[in-house]
Image: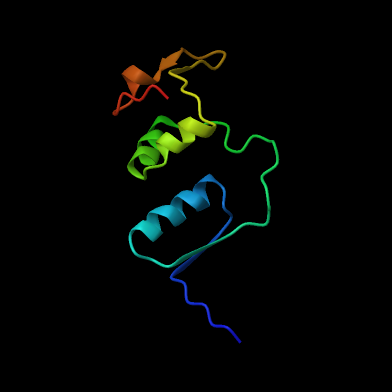
Amino acid sequence: MLKYDYDVITVGGGLGGAALAKMLAENGLRVLVTEREVEFKDRIRGETMAPWGVAEAQNLGLYGRLRETCAHEQPFIHIIGTPRRDFRTTTANASPR
């Protein structure tokens, strides 16, 4: 019988699980990522990321890869019945995403 020794096992290799695994592995932990999909289907996975999530993605070194592959900047949000919110002027990190 083989013995495997991991510090952390993440269940799911989506944005959250993969980001967590990357950060932990870069900090010396032995990480296993489990994912049931062999290939992600063409579907929306995480429709939005809040401005503070952008800062976290930048801190984890994931932001560039997200922009290269699937992310689009959205400098504002406008929900019907509410004032338009400009993220560049209303977030602590002035993030236009």
